[in-house]
Length: 471
Image (cartoon, rainbow, N blue to C red):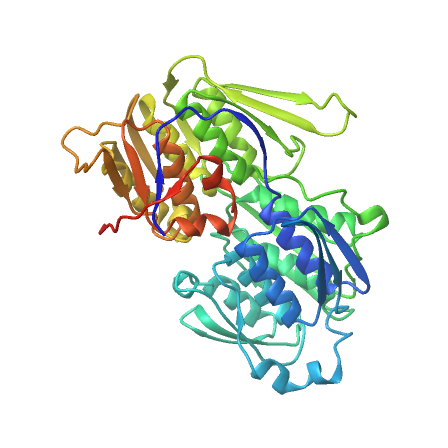
């Protein structure tokens, strides 16, 4: 689908959708528990629907409650670490009869690969065209070291996993934190007496490990975690993690219940970017400033670039916060380390395009192994809008001039064109940029925004374009 976004000031109040990272973790944990869990006000998106499909394939029963088109909650009857499967589900043919499709969700795939290693039947995974190009080799090598049988297409899907989990010590470089989160979620359910020790010489996206560990802690699962911050010799975290088997995940109820899934700071970056690019003022609801999500770093980026960022406790019942973001003057460049928050690169890059001076987004080489090589794609697509940038092996420098420049660019009928590359964050970033553009922008593969933020393009009054574009 090609969507057209027309320049305008973006202001108002927006309820941010629930966190994808929290929703997927809660779905998988609830599916491994013994009993019924409730996940309230989750993210309902293409990625979380892929996770639901995996949970059902693992034997969990999931029902949903709706208010019109909105999901109120999901009820999940878990498989008790695969112990509650029916005889038909335990039979080898149950898994061999179909392949579990994880869609575009890398988080779902990586976490599910480790979980599948807890049981002794062969389970085969695949995904969409982008997932089929994303190697999980470091995770798969670690699973092999833990006694799990693995077959893959050079680290990519289709991937076959067959347990049982035997434990031991493995080394796992984490270009993405999802590899480590996968082992941390699965390893507690290994047999009693089994110990999983994970040496992590390189750990990107450390806040997402904090998130995963917060679930182990709230479910009273024992573990040992030592995380070493960067020093003068390296620019990434490292660590060592030990998890004994014989534990179990509890249902989400009582002390382990969440009133609702927290809002997603990764998604919040895009309406915030749209406001500061267009000169508007936005109030965001549903975010928790104390949440472990690393992508709240985007608020510091905006503040350092000259924006006003204001948290306010809700006044009606004292429960919850509102966040207001705007700018009174020009945006200014800066240098920002995105090692812990690579998903911010597209949003930060388009804001930088409207800043005065250079903005360096650094220490984020792992942005090249997301749905696309986001460093290369952002540089290439920004150039179509007259924005110069310099690619680094581990980042991107945007040479901002305070605005997009269209002189000498291919423009037809006051419209220019951008390729979204079927990457939800690329699409949403350029949709935000279009609000401050001197011309309307057509963006291809716009449907991919539904991976994490199904309503974002509607917020911007984006319209389906009736023109065909070749990019």
